[in-house]
Image (cartoon, rainbow, N blue to C red; front, side):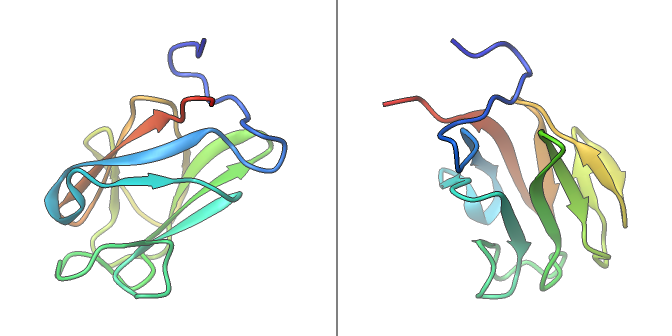
Length: 116
């Protein structure tokens, strides 16, 4: 069972985290965090690609583990990144399950990956 708001480790190599698209171009899509970091942005080589949104920078944000805690870092984007409705730019903030991340017009919810 997962405690509310706590991000546990999954398998030894990877955290048990996913981003669920709840609004915008990524609505209904689920992005598993299968490595220690995810790069999010408009460029096709990113782990999570948000195409066709003028408010999304090429490499907009990074979701990553730092000292055992999940963090969201804005990568000097043009329009900033939002965590739970609060804008931030050029910095890193801790993230928990249930948090909402907005990049451009897309909103993602941080969710737990069910163990199989």
